Length: 321
Figure 1 (cartoon, helix red, strand yellow):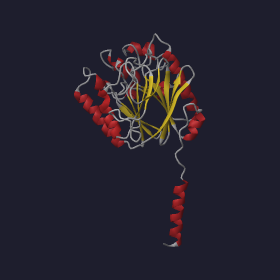
Figure 2: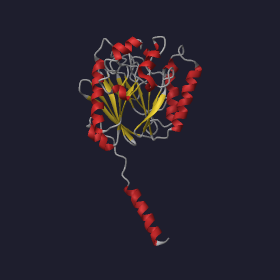
Figure 3: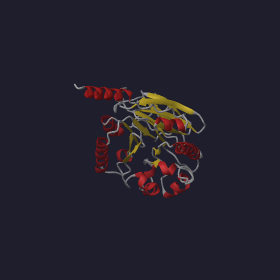
């Protein structure tokens, strides 16, 4: 090897060795400036949100807006997710106008500029989901479908419509197959290391509705595609699970972490008391309104439940597959 070649080879190794590692995302309690310095993005939100008889959604909206304003000033990329059941009781145009619009939909807040919603069962109680798609527009995905994806920093986010799985009266087998095929293709096309998916009905829950094996189809596709996080609502409580397979087997290598956060403002419920919690339930919280905040780094994530009482619950972390 000639001298110049040896020097070039040595310098290339030096450059590789000195390449800065991906910064670990800070905790949810970290100030916006620290999040910006790390290069992380923020995904924040909840499910089961607006109910005219409650002030819970106003409180969670104020909390989300405060995070968005601080992050915006610091230059942090934020997105707001909803895990379904956005406007009670029936997801009608009136429910959105009178219940959701004054809180999460308030134009004086930043939420609607960042929102990435998903539909729930209550959006389908009004004889169709037209009010949902009309209110959120293009941010809700194609009308009647409700599934779509987007990128947030170095992460890929997938939004699914669980009603296509659990509501056979509203959707045909062809609709369900189309969504599943789209999901497989989306995960194949987007090759980011880290992926988060969210929809309404949880596969695993210790809450009032109980676990739903019908969602196993989503899980199998996401598990095979290397997804890292699944976020859900439907049960009006907060619960985080250890990484699992679609069959509910603990898997610390390739398992998916599920977080249920149905605490956006709807009527809160207690966990089931007649049966034991789900086997891999890691943290449970009931009777508290609040939102989930995720700081998403290049290869890791941090999470915490921000309560409207000013407290921070269940700080957790994980690495992408």
